[in-house]
Image 1: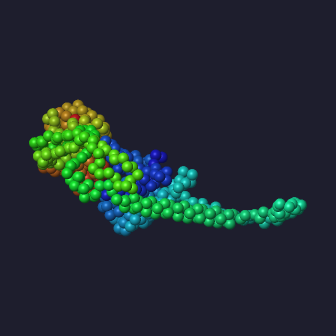
Image 2: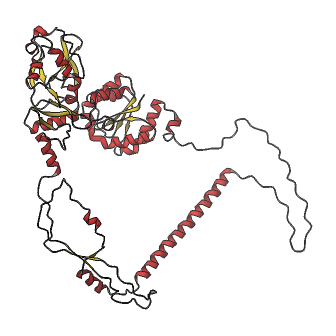
Length: 507
C-alpha cells in the first residue's frame, strides 16, 4: 500500500500532528496527513477515501477538539468498516463522546499528556508491532542490542595448553645485565580490557578539558591586560569628535539600491538634498605613547562626510494595512494581480458569485451563486422520465442532458431556477456539491464572504437541510443524490421532494 499510517486529527492540533508525522517518517513509517497531502484543487472527500484505502492502519490524535469534530467520525467509521487497526494517541484526559466512544473506547490507546512529544517513540514501536514491519526497515525503532558473553550450553573438556618454552639464559656481559626469561603472557579478559580503555579515555578527556580551560583563562587575562593599556587619544576627546561629525564609509551603493516596497506606499514629502563632501586624508591628532611598537603615525582613511539637514524627514503614509487591502479585494471581486483564491467574491462579465474552486494558476475556476432556493428537483410527471443526467463530476453535462427533454423548464424546476441566473449557470454534480458543502475549509471561506455580502450562507454540518445535486442514478430512477447537512453524508432522495439548491458557473 502507499501509506503505513493514516493520521486522523482536528485542525486545532496540527502542531502536534506535524511533530508526530515528522518523527514517524524519520523511522521509515509512511504517513498520510490532510494538511500536507491534500492539494487546494483536490476534492477533499475523494482524497480522504482513497488515502484510507491505501493505508494499512489509522492513528487517531485524540483531544477535546477531536472529540467535538464530526468530520473525523466519517474517517473512523470508514477505517473500522475496512477492518484496519486503529491506534489512539491521547493528548488529553477527556472521555470519549458520541461516535468516538462507540469506536475507540474498547481498543488500544496511548496516554501522551501532558507532554505528547515524549510518547512519539511509543507510537512508533506500537505501529511496528501492529503492522509487523521488517526490523531492518525500522532499525531505529528497535531497542538497542547489548552484546553479552554467552556460556556454552554443553560443557566442554579443558584444552591442554603446551608448556611455554623458556629460552636458555644468556651469558652475562660486562656492560649489560643478564636478560631474565620472558614469562608467558596471561590472557586479558574482555571486561578488564573495556575498563582499561574507558579509564584511558576518561583521563584523556580530563586532560583536554584542563588544557581548554587554561587557554580560555589565559585569553581572558591577556585581553584585560591589553585593554588596560593607555590609549593615544583621551576618551573625552574621542567622544567630542564623534559628536562633532558623522562619518560613514565612502561606499554608498547599499543606500542607492534600496527601494520602497510596492505594498507599503510612502507619502511624498519635501526632502532637502543630501550634501556629500569628500574629506581629505589627515594624520592622527596625537602620536602614540612611548610603549607603542609602531612609532610611525598612520593617516586616517579618506571618508565621506554626509550632512543631513533637519528638513529631510520621511513619514509613512497613513492608510489601510495589507490585510485590509486584501480583504477589500476579496469583497470587491478583484483578484490579486488577476488571480483568485477560494472565498473570493467574483463579479465579472455579468456573473456574480463566490469562488469555491480554482485552477493551479489561479486564473480560472468555479463559483456558486449568491442566493439559494428551496425547490423540487422535478415535477411528479417527470419523476420516472429517463434523462441520462448521471455524471458525478460535470454538472454542465447533466444540464445539457436535461435540456434535451421537451418542456424541460416546466418539468425540472431546479434546473430552470439555475438557468434563470444566466446561460452559464447550472445545478452542480454530486462531486461539485460535496466540495463546497462537506469540505469544512471551503465552506468556511465561502460563508465568510457571503456573510460580508449579507447573503444566505451555506448550511453548516450539524444543521438540518438537504442540497440537491444534478446526478441521477441513486439506487432507483426516481431518486437523485443529495447531501444531508445534518451528518454530512450522501443520501438518495425522491425527485419530487423540496430541498435547497445552489447554482454553479465556471470562469
